[in-house]
Image 1 (cartoon, rainbow, N blue to C red):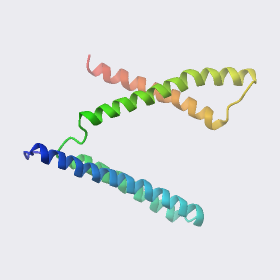
Image 2 (image 1 turned 60 degrees about the vertical axis):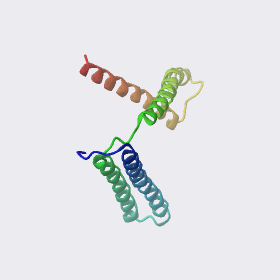
Image 3 (image 1 turned 180 degrees about the horizontal axis):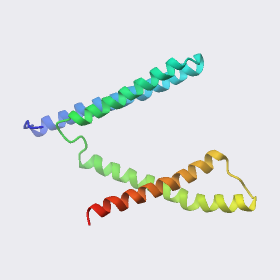
Length: 145
């Protein structure tokens, strides 16, 4: 991090390390799904453990890419894109929680409709996510006051 890089070199390094990170994650995820298919066919646990190992190697490769990058890997535009995506996901989670939980409680209590366990689990999982976000927000805000 002590070396001075020109603007062009910074962009090249950013692209180089971003490729490394994306390829590491991609290879880990793809290899895990491939081994899941092979495991489903062969029912060999060793295949499943090998896939999990390859997945974690991809995660370690991603961490190494972030750790050793001499430049920031996200520029302002990418940060803005992430912020907009975060807003969209947060709005979806809020809507699903605000509408889903009361609907689940009322409909199942009255016997009109009982949601499948997967849907009910997802809605209540969103509620847990909202609570975790709220706690994290409260904690971080407290550090700046």
